[in-house]
Amino acid sequence: MSAVISQTELRRLVDGWIGQGVQVAGPRQVKPDHVLYALLNESGQLAMDGFVRPANSIKEFVYPRHEKLYGYRLNEKEIELTDVELPAKPQVVLAARPCDAAALPILDPLFNWDFQDDFYNRRRELTTVVTLACNNHDAHCFCTAVGLAPDAERGSDAMLFDLGDGSYEVRCLTDKGRKLFDGKTQSSDKVGQAKAAPKKTIDLEKIRSFINGDFESPYWQELTLRCLGCGSCAFTCPTCHCFDIVDEGNAAGGERVRNWDACQFCLFTKHASGHNPRTAQGQRQRQRVTHKFGIYPDKFGDILCTGCGNCTRNCPVSLGIFPVLDSIQKVETGAVEAA
Image (tube, rainbow, N blue to C red; front, side, top):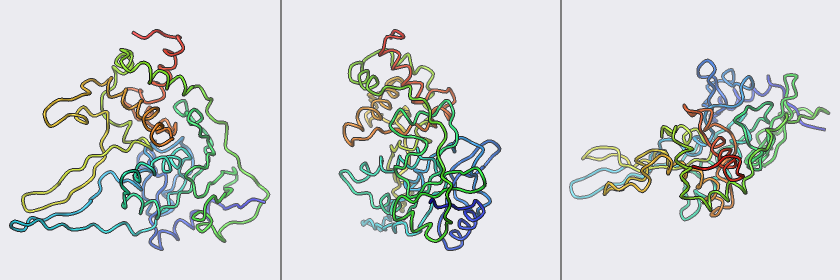
C-alpha cells in the first residue's frame, strides 16, 4: 500500500503551515511563462504543473544572495561589532525538482570543510525539502549524465508522484519528511512513477580526459566566444556557490555582508595590483567546467552539477554546461577537430 494525498489537501496543508509561521517556498508563476521558486503567501500561488522547472534554484533558501554576517560601528578609536542572530524560522521547500534537492548534499561539505558555516547549517537544519518527481523534461535536461534521474531521492525529505487524478503518492524518505506528513495521507493501492528520463548522451570520462589533457587547448576559446560573461548560468545553477565578502556602510559603521559572485565575471579574479590571471572569457569558461567536473569531484567526491539545464535555458546566447560538454566530447572522440 502507498500513502496518497489529494492536491486539495496538500494546499490545505500549505495554508496551515503558513498560518503557523512556517516559511513555505515553491514554484510560483511570477510573470506569464515565467516560474520561479519563491516564497508563498498562500497555497493558490503554488504552481504544480505546466512547466519543466523553475528558472532559478532552491539554493537561495539555504544560501541567500545577500547575507549579513555582522554589523560594525566606529566609536572613536574602537570598533564595536554586532552579532547577527542565526535563522530561527522553519521552512518547507515544496514541489522542488529532484535535480534541485540533490544539490544540497553536494554543497554540504563545502560549507563544512575548513570552516563550519553556522548560517548555512542552521538553514539546512530548519529546511524540509519535498520534491515532485518529474513528469517531463526538455532538450536541456541531462540529469542522467551525472548519475541522477527524474525520481532521484538524494537531498529529498519526501517525494511526491503525480497520479494524474488530482492526487499524489507521498514517499517519506527522512524523519523530517515523515514528521511533515504524519497523519496527513490516506492509504491507497495506487503507485506513482516518474516519466521517461533524458537519454544519457555525455560520457564524463571523456570530459575528464579533455580537462586533464587539454588545459591549454585553443578550443576553450573557440567554444566559448559567444559567452557574454553575464553570470546568469551561475546565479540560476543549483550548485554554483562563489561569493564575495564586502563592507557596506559609511565612516560611522555598517555591515559586513556576503553576496553571490560568479567565476564568469571579468572582475572575479582581478587582483588589487590590476593583474587578472583569467583575462579571456574562454579561460573563465574553462575554469567553470574544470571546477565542476574535475576540481570539485577530486576534493569532495561529487560532481558539481545536477544536470538541471538551467544554465542553458537562462543563457542569452544558449551556451551553458550541456552544449559545452557535448562539444568537448565531440573533440575528444575526434568527431570534430579542435582549432
